[in-house]
Length: 420
Image (cartoon, rainbow, N blue to C red; front, side, top):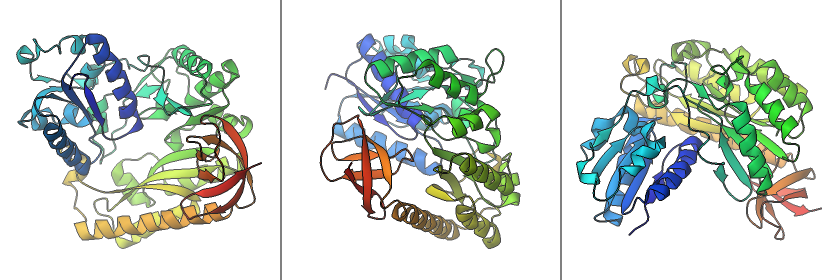
């Protein structure tokens, strides 16, 4: 082993930052190292991080194990105590070229084994480090990092710090370069994407950024935005949804629950009525719009009736793609001190929510038969529609190209189609 090995757990932003670290490590000449970029969103994510470290230590005997990411930021002592781990570095440090310059083989033994500083003191983000990442078809561009909100279940602000934005000019320049390299679709990513711009001069909003990208990069065929907080959607964003066909009709919403008391105890800033109204409005502006959503099953104090409200929200918001989290307490969060729901009930509720999501997806896919879609090809025979539905084609197409297809059927998990 010479070139470093990277392992990523968790979100798209972590995957983005792994690509930045890969470039930084290569520039510094780092060798014989395994870098694990961890996730802290749930206790299960931390457990998986430890499991991955042990697996990689067995697979690469003698390699230096370097642990970073949100779990390393929030629990540095946990990972530094593992005998397999040589070094723990924080989320800020992992984006600093000087960190990687110190990781030469002759210095690793003299390096402080824990390099994790106060993430709340960070005022900039490192979104400029790489020009996106992804498949040959789709690139992801980080435009924001951190979060100013303090939901009672969430540890992520303590792993990511406060919200900070990549300036619009930097974002536009990145996207221009990606389009010049042949990308037809770009996805904007961040921890709290709808807070973009709040720390920039003039406090622009996410909608302003979207409209600026579409205006200044006319050759970009598709712009997609990742998870948003619907209560923060601004007027310019709604205008873009209504009037910009190059903005894809698919939004992933941070809803978390469908009961107002649970939302209040989560310290969310929306009600179930707000969520339903947003979906109704967005769909009225763009009838082809589809929605995904994050939902937590078994939040502390959740009764059967409160859970049923979340179940009903799937239909009332017209959700198509669900990302279901069984609640697990994160030490140091207010929710961990609330009365907990029994584990068996949490697992049962998560399974029921997932089943409702599966049924909603099946209904949506079945309704697409006979429709025509533009499909961005991710492989020669698989791509995704504007609404992000997976499509399998009857004959191979060029990867990275947008192909017009007619939907011939569905399997319950994806569409089947033939080129027009």
